[in-house]
Amino acid sequence: MEAPIQTDAVIIGAGPVGLFQVFELGLLEIKAHVIDSLPEPGGQCIELYPDKPIYDIPAIPVCTGRELTNNLLKQIKPFDAQFHMGQEVSSLEKQADGRFLIGTSHNQYFISRTVFIAAGVGAFQPRTLNLQGLDAFDGKQVFYRVKDPEQFSGKRLVICGGGDSALDWALHFVGKATSVTLIHRRDEFKAAPQSIAKMRALCAAHEMTLKIAQITGFESINDCLTEIAITGIDGEIRNIPVDDLLLFYGLSPKLGPIADWGLDIDRKQITVGTANFQTSIPGIYAVGDINIYPGKKKLILSGFHEAALAAFGAAAYLNPEKQIQLQYTTTSPKLHKALGVGASTFE
Image (cartoon, rainbow, N blue to C red; front, side, top):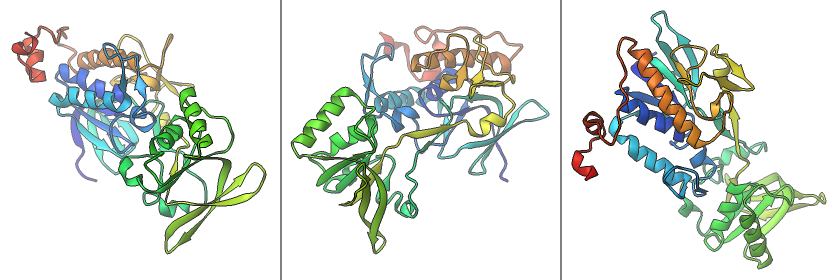
């Protein structure tokens, strides 16, 4: 075991609320390390709807999940938060001195004075297709997310799923891929009505294909996926040539080890007080969709508010003898210095 990283704050979750938590802590001179099970920051915004419009962020009439994430990363840049991506927090133990020992799935350890759980509804893992042997093609020809759309140009694409992600990417690749086949187990979709209408119009024009079926097998040659077998609602099995297979069955949230940390939990959510969003364990705070309290609304906006109050709560917890002054980024020279801006910026 390597020596644990010592810090004042560990944030579990790098979604929008976790990122804004970095900002609010930074304004109060509290440095943070951020841990997330996903490979990059952004949480659900990046994994589920990176290019879908969001309309309820204050003062931003519309932005995509990707734009929101990028703007938050730009906003927190002055505070030099350290990110530890692609690893899940596996253990949390309170030490004799009141600090918390945090371990991850990569055997990385932290000693932190405070912990902020901003894990959405838990650690996200893609729902996979349970087909023996298919996992050998993961990351080669089978993908559960799109990082580089260009790599699929000119390919025979098969896309599975009935939600926004599946339809959005199917529509995106029409005209770019050699062929696009959308597979869903039923002729009903949980996607934006305009996307469903556009998909059906493209199918009618023979620019893409819709199959109401399920994948039940595959063929490969020389360790290369060549065909998938689908079984339709009529029970007939058909083979479809494929270069790349994109699977969008959604993300499976799991509370995971959080459930074993001794926190008060109600319906798989962490109960908090609304004065500072502290949990039942002093020094541990929960913000965003992971928490529950009377009147709770699962909105990014609500999470931003919770992050601000949790930061002030943590500042008081870390410095109980110090009076925490409320300062404004508009006028405070101290905050201007922390943000790396000068008075001329506002003139």
